[in-house]
Length: 458
Image 1 (cartoon, one colour):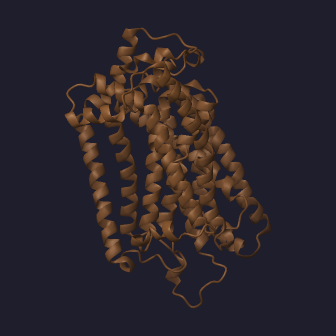
Image 2: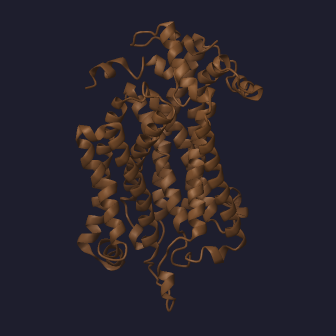
């Protein structure tokens, strides 16, 4: 049986009529039912970019020192680790949109939850890919599992990343089970293998009261689990820096600084994703201006929190201006990195903190433009955390060429980075073409995002 058995669970909202439910179901299944010409072109483009990245990685592994020439003893991490930190931060989108809002009973989360969960899974997977790209000997990756020492923060990172991936995938899959049954029963003209996949993955779902009880209980447990896991993964990532002997990373504020930035990036990334999905699949009835208004308010809140932790991170060392901290801060404030640094501060913190305070800027298009700017600034913020921090070691190397003190990524490195972004978008796109990107049963249960919030929205 299909998802229409949701009425076995009582809700505080009026129930759908059969006609309303069928219309909603058809609209939400439309992206899965049919892929247009431009959808295929988009998928082909993403696949092509990914293939370019694979080829660039092949070049890197066969001619390493010639194609990553700027990676020296000073800057040994480079743009790949910046990318890794960015994707780890983006993965917290699932914690904020799917877990925190769900536990705090904000009903407007319902059409957003699956979008957030898919992005979270894709982002954390690509964070792992970024780490592999940074490794000099990827064939020895398994040594981390076989011979890793628990005293090493890298092992801590591996543990929380693997746990977070597993938990996020389970949290994505379990609420998907009723949707798989709906796909099995109501999609037409799909290949037999696809229909068999729906039948196999739905595990005989029939929508009985007992099944719904187990489903809801499982989702509740996973929702509670994923919050500390999500926070811990970015905290441990911050500890990877803080436990490394670089003056610029010697901070007890780093964990909260990283987590607050991740939540800001998560909200901005969600705004962009919702806008694109809304326009691409004509889902304006479900991803409404109310959602953008709520996300805009969240963006302001996260921006002010992030500004607070940035003040903690930079103001105290800047007040003292002692030792190697002074060299680093002068580079950021007035030196070679100052243009990028102040651009990131303005576009990545003050723009999202001020502009969405005005209601016209919380409309879908202007808010999305702001969010795109924030996402770009967030990537460069991670770049500024990684690269300048490596340029001021406690024990500078003597008599090295001046070029060793400066880093700029090569074409091969940037191709691989571009491929990671293409791969993340490809994962989200393919998911939306095989499974409903908005949960049919969750929206139906909440009566189109929560009836009371729709009525009271002005």
